[in-house]
Image (cartoon, rainbow, N blue to C red):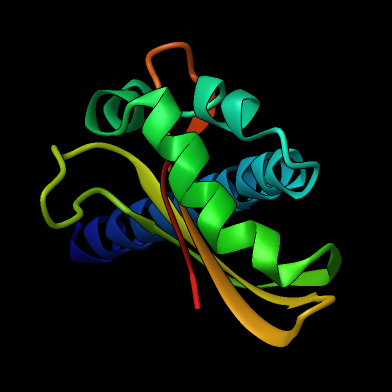
Amino acid sequence: MRVLSIIVVCLMFFSCNASSSEAGKEGAHSAEQWLTIVDRGAYEESWVESAVLFKTNVAQTEWDKMLGKVRQPLGANLSRSMEKAEYTSSLPGAPDGEYVVATFKSSFEEKAKAVETVTVTKSDDGKWKVVGYFIK
């Protein structure tokens, strides 16, 4: 009986890791798609495609201004590769839920090395939507 319990616990562990791994991939893919919107300079569209939590914290006009100040001086995106995607159910200052924090190594015309971090959450409709974006 004890062996059966250990097998069940192991299966549950691997099942949970597979689920979070798949969520990480899905979330990172959504983050990358959202970044292509930003790359086009479609800042209003990037706001529209973001999660409700994001929209309640940043007005669309303010987002346009902030993102323009940060991204326009960098020039066009030349390359981007995902460095990591981490699934979590908890983030500081945010309600518990499903989140993926995706980190990308990026290169721009005016900044050869940059790191972009995009945080996405699973919305009520099942889609991964952006709740945060940072670049350094």
